[in-house]
View (cartoon, rainbow, N blue to C red):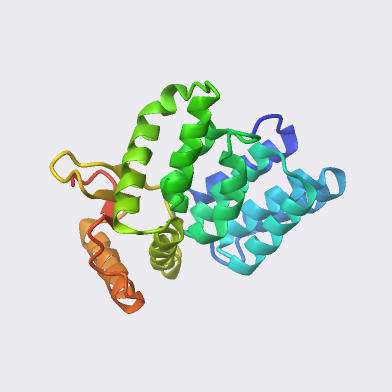
Length: 251
């Protein structure tokens, strides 16, 4: 987030250090509680930054209801696009794309948002067709997407495939919510997914989440995701697939 104060920078840095294990911190973690006291003080001085810090604080512990409550307080206080994108990232890190989608729709809109900065969250929120429309709007406005141009092309291709099969963004987000459930059940943070458009299967694409774990563990995660997909009636979608891969493992 641009324009951050030194206090929130230190808070986020401390919380990022706690996230490096890839798993939620355990109750009773002293460092987590220390950061909480710092956030309490910041809320009284700068409520927007304070509540944003509170979002990260609860993310580190995996406290779903408290994440929602903190994000709502951020929305109540500001519509600053960099801040809203931070909350999108928090929801993505907790594996909740459906919850992130409304905020993402605002922050990515080229009319008042920042599409180049928002593009990396397109697959994470499932908002591929919406973003494809935003890309068209940005192009009409002469917006330079810069380094995000390659990703924009992938998003446009994926959107066309979804449209062809009559699959909505909300359908994709609900599917990705299941992947988030798998991670939360194991007390893991969700990574930002990679969007793959394989040349050998031009009529489908892949949304891949990398997990810092063994191939055996990732196979278990994929099995659990498959079970959730079947229970939700969304197994066997021909347009795209959602998978977990072990970080560093070749697909």
